[in-house]
Image (cartoon, rainbow, N blue to C red; front, side):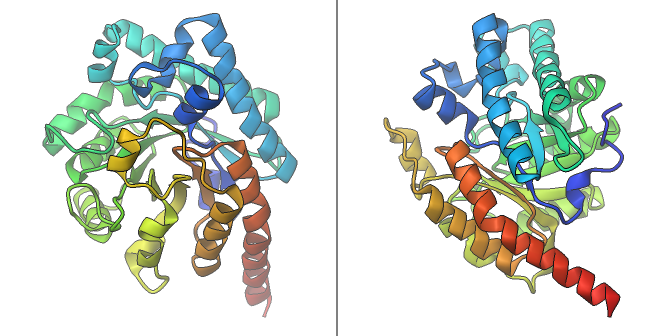
Length: 328
């Protein structure tokens, strides 16, 4: 069983980081060809495996340096049946890649984890279709059946939890949650939003979270937002709203570009790491429960380092204030 499956440490108040934009880093900074953005495809040969080791070691080193936790998110965003078939993987070969991705993270955790840098292994689940455009929308039961085999593989490989990244419509998110429940895995749902703060379907983030919670009896351990810039959603997150308290994690893009603009871009918009870090600091200063901070498209270790330096003092201040309140 996963080391933290029954007690996820990121549900405490300490800071946990994640990696940045794995695909954009590997493509634009490391020069790898990732067909269909499929980072898991690198696991098929030694050089690719070593590239992923190097990538995750970079973030494990940051976590150790700043004495913060780390969510090790597997390189499996595209490792589901439709994308796997497109890349030439049959069911058995795809399951092997998913197992191998989790095994790599076990190696990283064994090498780098400490008492002050706890490392949680998450099996990453991506959307069946395009991450930006909801197409061929599944019913809840179809999504549950579609994603269950990958979740079962993560469970058997001793992942601590599964995280559905870049969810763009609510039925798929509910189906994944139900599948995870059925096989005994903690699950996190990360929605993506457009420039107006709404899902690509036009549904509000509030409605999406509340719909998933209502359909699953609040089953997700927490929610996240990814693949959008803070300027697209930060104004929606106000402390007085109950649904906002269900959001614990942010993995923002470096770029302020829309999804449509990012799809057409041939260059990498890396944004400004310090500016992004300050935007994170503003969010956690307002929302103390936000304690899982990472990046998405265009971000890399520079952004995550800047986020640590900007946000750690704020989080420590929140923790100190809580201790003072308990002692008075």
